[in-house]
Image 1 (cartoon, helix red, strand yellow):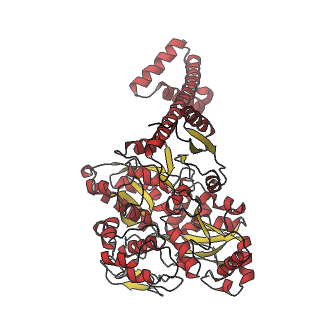
Image 2: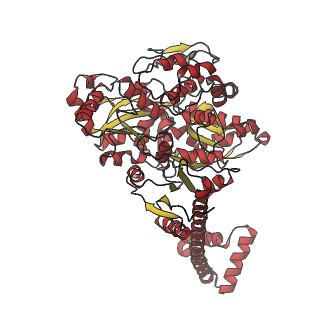
Image 3: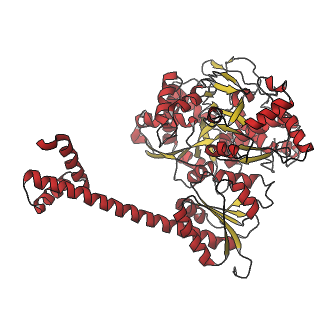
Length: 425
Length: 200
């Protein structure tokens, strides 16, 4: 097998986060090796650095924010060739946490709204309005990168409550390991990041978690395995071997014992470097805080394999594009189909899944946010159990008409008329 | 190109390594085209909006890079949008910068020819620092190796009652046979000695 690979020495970059688990464990459990690959893992300190290292070929494969791949195809990432992905690493895993002072202010201004589950930003809107009236400076919220699910989730939650994220509050990027310090120093009032920076803030009494990404937007796409398109084209067998290995590891991670083993290995300094018990909670969703002081086990807090979690749904890619337009990150019109077909290679996923005995969807798109209950996907190699996926405002993204979906946004920073976009789509 | 005629570029250097910072700063001062500004690492955004730099040179391993990346996309609070340096030619300078560990951001609208010397100096200085670091590591390594070899030699001389020259020769022979370094041979001798204690 391995003798036919175009390349066997592979460098894969990861950011020290809980959802690097499938990559780290594929290496630690010898699964890359089994697939004829000699993989070296490199810890990367920022998403920008990850992008640059992948772009110049110092890394072949990257743990990556899903929207970065799409942004690269649209030419929105500097000095970067188009990336592509054939596999998602996980769904969910983020949360919005705010300072205790802001929580108290929200509670004071609207105690009724603070009891909603999932919690909306209604009370926050009252606080923001009061601040504007009294001439106080706007609240500042942090997320992790402009092209990230965190950015779009935070904006979605704010906008769903009638707040304009570009006018009513100040949005900045802060590296996750620094968010707690920034909040303690009063530089930021809240943030949307992955784990363990939400539970850590709760445990240390620095902040209060309001909502997890799963409650905000059910089964939301998160990280992917990114590569350069040109590299994928030139190394088809190697690319498939890597995908097979990571997919096999994802299946292994479905088991609770595996997650605990992963947490203990990932706690090592050269991986995530945090106590294993912190990582366990991020992986299993045990004892999570939400809606202020509510504590609950959330088995779907981070999903690595079930619900077809690894399938690169082109409807996810298309939804990300609607958010890029919505928030003014892109001002020229693109044909959605052309971008998502390049960015998300569902065809390659199916090939790899089939060879490895995994079940897979036979369609590329589904309506997002439509299901309020668990359901079964029949358009698949074998029926697949999927979970509820509604959004906080119950809005449904119909993949057949992204423009109509965008027309429904009352809060936006669109930089081109939707009619212009409609001409190309 | 007459850079001296125009007003100096305000360069903000963000680097957690104080020693490298000094080396890069010295290089940029020498160029006489720049005015250096330093950032409060606790709040980079506040520093940027206060200092209004034309160029930001950043250690590429700094997690704060993503903070700057966001300014590239949203420039509401800062009147001067910051974009990543893109070379006009074949992108080789950008690649070199990534490899050297330099990330550079410039104010939108600044001609790249004006900024190019700054980036080149930064790359050169980052490389210089890496070279010094390697040298330092190597001399530390050499010193450590010498210590280990001396101790192993002492053990051999003591236990086998051979001369210093003979002890060293036998270590060298073993190193050649097993194609490992003399330091590795010495380490083996030391670990065996510590395992067997006085019976060795």
